[in-house]
Length: 230
Image (tube, rainbow, N blue to C red; front, side, top):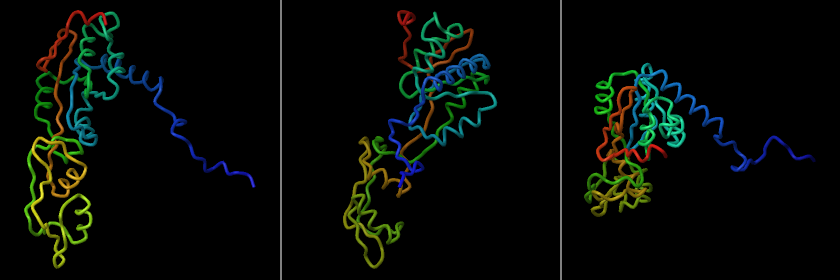
């Protein structure tokens, strides 16, 4: 009997990756955005949340264009030096694209951009590895916020619990996390159950470019003339 060709296992090595065409499309989109907008900014982010960033981006879509992804691709689009920059002085933005960074091209006034970024923050549940911002300790006794069905799951997270007449009870004091220490997977899940949000999604402006000027926001970031030829 012939082997069916409908159900074949495809190894990950054979799946299509984002290749040269995808990178070139991004480069072209950035170049076009630079042409269509009056200014450009590099920004960094902490505790990125994709859905929240999407909503933030949607609020500005009529006047702005955001780019996130490979810093090298964004640097290539802008130009890494005076010799290959797409606009006068814009290569300096490339020098600021490091780590968790993004690019914003916009027609909004400088004061409006600064206000939006300064005011924006969204609180969310912390993920594994996030540094705890406070000590969370549960005291011995009933945990009435949890139903009896939760008792096995709580035990898996390391909580010393038992059922007492159908009520989840902590048999001894328990420290979920310590201030300044990274969260374990169990601690992150427990904080979510307790509805404690320790992560804040923020965006920070690093630098600003217009055809007439270049400005650095982030203290300690220095652009040396020696780097111009790189």
